[in-house]
Image 1 (tube, rainbow, N blue to C red):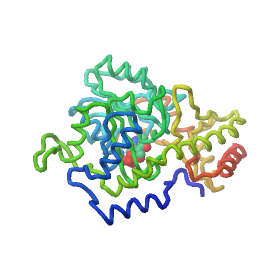
Image 2: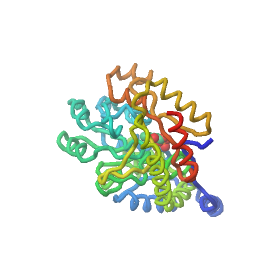
Image 3: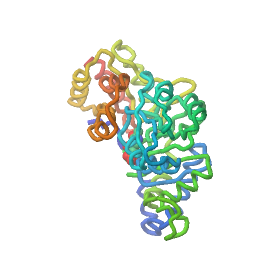
Image 4: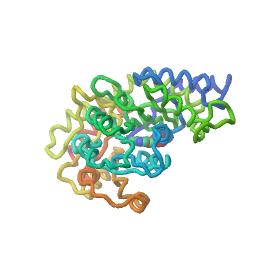
Length: 367
Ligand SMILES: Cc1ncc(COP(=O)(O)O)c(C=O)c1O
């Protein structure tokens, strides 16, 4: 089976872990060991910002960013429903209320028009997602955030290597949240990072990561233990250096798929524009004539032929039992339609040129 995603590692990551195991420390009580600090410096450079704060998951990065934005209990954060559950979960974990808004059907990212219609007196922040590795439309979202005095936090869990208006994804947001989970463009097993240009947010994020402390046993604000261990930071340093090569290979595979799949009239394919470059975390196509059952049959048939195609995300968050019962039902037509018709194909760096061709031809044959 060609899996939908797979970590790309070699001897360099193993050596990096061994070095930490031999020399230590394996972690640091304030979350700022030498490997974490080195990784943060490199990550801030990569993201084109002043600060990077390493944490232990992408979910923790989102939760810390919402807390650092000063969102209070019962205040609202506008989020898409067409995303991984962690985007909304982090808002709830930070004590606030997620309010779902619909997506733009072409990019599957939060629609600026839908966001503006969703703003109430309680809205405090918005949290667009750079879904599949394609940036949300950050300029209009930034304008709306500034007009209404909202915090703009971006979920860049899938967007390592993506750009918007020539700048790394997340740059237009007040803070951007990255995942280093094993499936991502770069990974540390589990891990996350928050990036920001703001000194004030950086200061708060560092406290939130470590029980609200600057000095041990003297909490200044509510925090938790969100620290990244040194072992993971050591892997992250190696992975980050390989990221440009990883993204180039993903793009090559994506371009080959597009060349083959363009023959089909039944698909809308992912694309790039001069303004927005993909990270190609997922190559997601849309079967325009499909019902959910038809799309699911395509996934089953692809799996039967050894191709690990998947659909992200089949259940919009607002339809999930916990979210529906706590935050109410909401009609999001574009989200619902996309959830029934999209499917993603493997383009990770482990997919060879021949395999990418086979994936494309197999999809064409099944359609
Ligand atoms: C869009 C999105 N947001 C948040 C997360 C959460 O990241 P993590 O799994 O590292 O907690 C993920 C990945 O799993 C994701 O894909």
